[in-house]
Length: 221
Ligand code: E4P
Image 1 (cartoon, protein in one colour):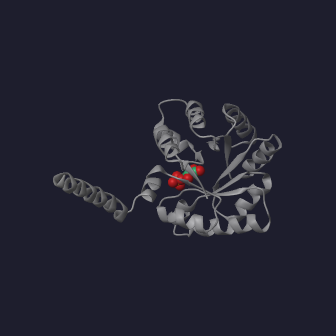
Image 2: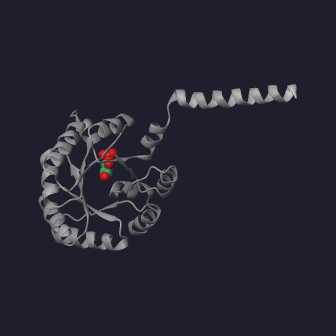
Image 3: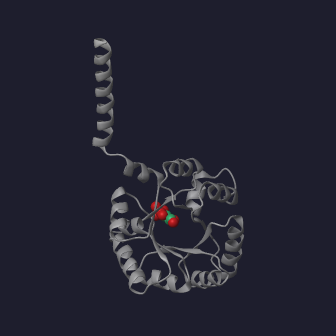
């Protein structure tokens, strides 16, 4: 499963890239608002310099022409930009037009397998079902991941399922077990995936024992 970072924070992206586990990045207007400070374009270009993987840039227009204008603009910023388009009647048309133009799209705000199926048919290269937001309303978000992965596999659709709205390390394990092609994860969850109390305790103990052994050896010498 590919791992994307779900953030517009450059420091977080640099850190994950250094860890050697970063396959791409997803951004959205909310994540951009959290970092702010400079233009969305400038942030996207900076991210695209850090990772050669797909970097999702989200349109905010609700009409087809507006989506096309914003998406074409993003696509010119860097070769690895993927235009993120919301699931809607207009979004489907825009994704279909982008596909004709060779511009890759990530269909966002997917909450049902049917929505994902339609986005795949319209030519989206990434399908983003929102797991956490479904869990928030007492529905099992992982069901949509499992269903979409099955649909993509059974019908050999040329697209990938991207588990989005990930809130916990458990979501990541479940998405991987469901066969999700990609999961996009907040940096905090990525850090939670790294750590385990027994691992952290073990590192401290090994260091202590090593220093003890060296001190004993030095005392004997
Ligand atoms: C990423 O593509 C999505 O926009 C993001 O995962 C949404 O996450 P949230 O539901 O935590 O805002």
